[in-house]
Image (tube, rainbow, N blue to C red; front, side):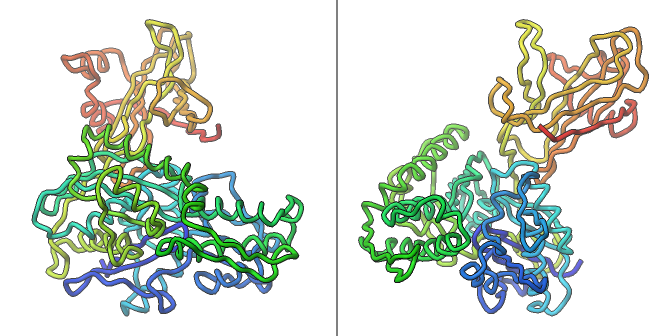
Length: 507
């Protein structure tokens, strides 16, 4: 393997780092330590990425794309630019390709291997889409690593003391909170929670909407071509205002010509906090939930690490200090996730070389519970039976035994759900698993469905049609629970006859 890199593919900004010569280095892209996660399409077909693309947001917002990470994994989300259709995966591919090329120039050799970070609360679809984007960009994705875990690695490596760390990660578009046990260089995630649609963009939006009301901007004006340009101009000004309010109680926002008028407004920290309090409350709820899931109290937390550019906001730091304790804020807050990923990449790509850091062990957990819908025998109600529970150590497996209920039934259909509840809903359904029966019979046919989640948190299915003897007498433990390791080994060894699996992810 060649040199491997760590990539923080962010909503607002991305970063890349490498571990070599005994230390971790942030790799500059276009001369800067972070690169805007923006692409822009010109009339001549040229695709700009990074700083050049962000500059075009002002003059051509309709053909420029920002914050697309929020929608990665959503098959319905598309962008229309210059008579072409672009998906969030395409956007991520262009960003990662730019990073790969720049990293290759900096290191002096072709870079292929990478660890890419993702929000801990990303779903299987979002993880799979991120991996696909990396492969499309010419990368061999060694692993998808959660952003809080990457930050904990960069912070906690070689600290030589046992700690219980909470990582509060508020980026441009996503929020994660994780609790990790760190023992020497073993990083074990205990519990995760988060919100993949909560980030700095929402804080900007709250202030932007407030200022547009002040300007009395109508819906028709906002939705016009000129309106799109003006909104982008206003959002950029709001970003600067947010930064000023991180250090001062007052900030002025002045734009001479916007929406046919001018804007000259003073915003104080009290107004800012009022407008964004509901967003902060959502992060507080997640803090309490992750503590409960971990079976800990705030007194058990050794240190809170703030990650993500949006944690520079004073309101965020104050709420974390009030809820848990005074947080630690890294000097390189925009680079720490990429640097942790680089350390992980070095361990995965060349673990036996002297140039790699001290060997580390990383244990991550599932961010959601996965189950299937079945009729509950006692109540005759359709319920979700969880096969893999949230916060289960990765990699992991779960299995369920299924029965046909009609003579010569040709298939079994299972509704697959991602939910913590036993009550199925349309929103929690992620697809349908169809097991084609190899040899339909007059009597019931039994099949096993096996769910597997790999080290990167990506879900796969396998299944087998089995005979009653091999199932009933071999697959149950003494306590009556399924012996999943045995079922898994039987499936993989060929002891059970595979059946065709069709997965329909359309709801």
